[in-house]
Amino acid sequence: AASVVMQALARALAFGQAGPLNVLRQLAGASSTCAGSIISMEPSTSMCSMHDASTVHGHHAWSTMRHASTGTANQPVMHGGASRPSPWPVLEQVTTPQQQKIRWQRSVVRFPPEVQASLHDSKLLLSGQAGSVKLDLTELDPSGLMAYRLLQAPNEGKQRSIMLLAGPEKERFQEVVQAVESNIQGVMQGYLVGLTVQGVGYRLQPVEEPVTATKWFFERVNYEKSNITYPYTKPASAIRIKVGFSRTAIYPLPSDVRAFCVKPNLLYLYGLQYDRLMSIAQDIKSIRKPNVFTGNGIQLVGEVLRKKQRSSKKAK
Image 1 (spheres, rainbow, N blue to C red):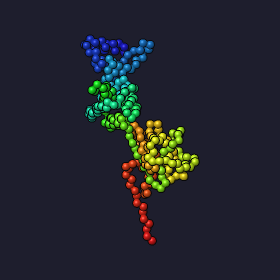
Image 2: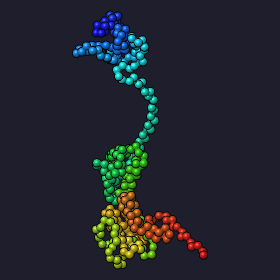
Image 3: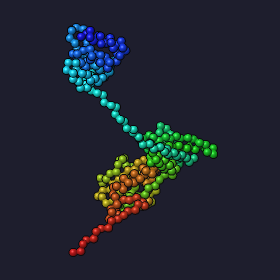
Image 4: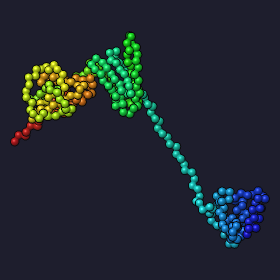
């Protein structure tokens, strides 16, 4: 059997037909016992072993060979024990929508000559006639997408500050610009937020003695009437609130906010930051919100209160 195989290989090489299919044809014609396979001799035994045709030159081949003894045709088989490779998948072209162009918002904030500005580590310090305010720009822009720069430009022999701002988010950009401009006005003259109270026996009075607490509380002992003349000219650091409870409430103010009592039912909060004043005013208002039917309670000056009409009893 070995000699037959060697002769078939020699004929294929002699005619230059050493391709995988030609070698298979030569072997199929030379051997009558093992059809559709290459017959080789193992070194250690005289038994013949079957080797797939796909191992020749590393190619897969389909072969339909006729058995020499029976004369029947074998079915097409895949030599090598592996399935026929599947075709490459048809890839669809994916079109991504065009990204919208980012429109950068830009603004130039010009500080008045009487306002001094300095920028250190994302903290803007403003100083004016009314006082000083420090703004943390990282709190105003937590995303960190805004860019800003402070420049000093001479103006009629004086240094005038100019701040350049740019950002991709329109709403956030406008909030930062408004905050800077609002604090510029705050350090120049400050802000006033008025509170008024309505109701029988309701009062807003200044506290003359020092208060160490940081949050509002109810007095343990009922407050005795004192001779307070209005308008009260001294700025108050705390407010005594009488709004119908069994005990009076004391509301201490922060160090940068003061109260001026004009009337027993009217006072004004003064500070450099408008947002901070409004937050404190809303907190004081929450102690006794206006009644929707009578209007009794604490409300902001100029606030429009819509009262509800009580439903009349049905006649029997």
